Image (tube, rainbow, N blue to C red; front, top):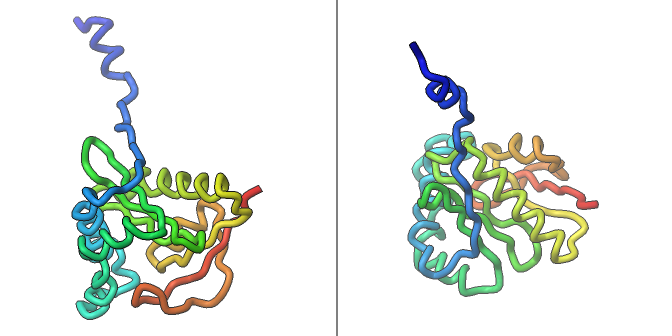
Length: 171
């Protein structure tokens, strides 16, 4: 015989881990570097096609020392934390364009990217921007399209790979 509590627990919704997005600090540069390089190496195969030279070019400026300069500079950067671990990194360049949005491979497809993009869009809107701008990799193109971003022009060189300029109106 099965008790009612066991049945209700069996059909209870599974708790989804909360995602926290907070401003990045110099203490986060190692996590940020690890996320950026792992994401590029493991998730962006459509862009680098496994070419070691392309990967090296793309990740060359993703060292903790370089990221420390970003965090101390005029851009704005955030770290996404899920289950107590760094799950993603995102940023806005001084010119108001989205400059970074990367998830660590284990967090890919679990909502961290969508949450970070929503966070960045809110930041841009609160800053008075009427539209958002970014350069999408081939890997991320459909991710952005599914969230209302539209390609503007032909691909151009960006990050050592071909990127597609995209825009999204706010309002």
